[in-house]
Image (cartoon, rainbow, N blue to C red; front, side):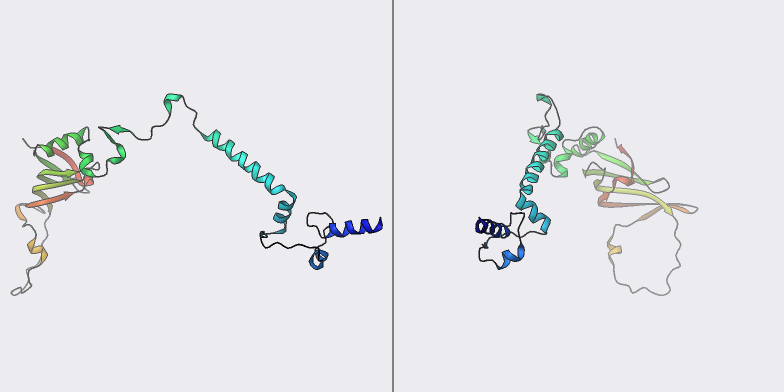
Length: 220
């Protein structure tokens, strides 16, 4: 009986799952079986949880909790109230509108009227503004636009006012070669009143930002 008890105790001391496990005896015992596919754990507590079976229980509990949370987070709706994946208008989904040209054809309201002016090649007068008030106006044809009222204009005749700038004339003959500014559209001073002057110029193409636009009027 004593031999049986001692052998049993010896086996328990080298058994990792036993409460009587002795790591020193297991390290030097010939009965200890080593596996080449032994998992690596971060700490002893995690190792003990795995050996005692607590790890599997926690995984099952977390899985059930996630399933319950997922079911509760779903929107409760009637059969006819489910969300629609894509709205089709005119045979095409809304996501297929990828450029400005396709969006201009489906605009409504004031932008729809602007699209009619563009299609009918109706000339418009666009009043522009600055930080203090109305800066001037541009008479042109609309080539393109977007929802922010950014305008691409053609055959533009621009009129605006600004403060008079006085510069002293240069002495002698200028030998500066022609620059890009000389190639720009010529600006003509039409009227000067005290410290303000009115200028005008013709520009073949012009891009006007929506934040600079005050009013758009159709020219009859």
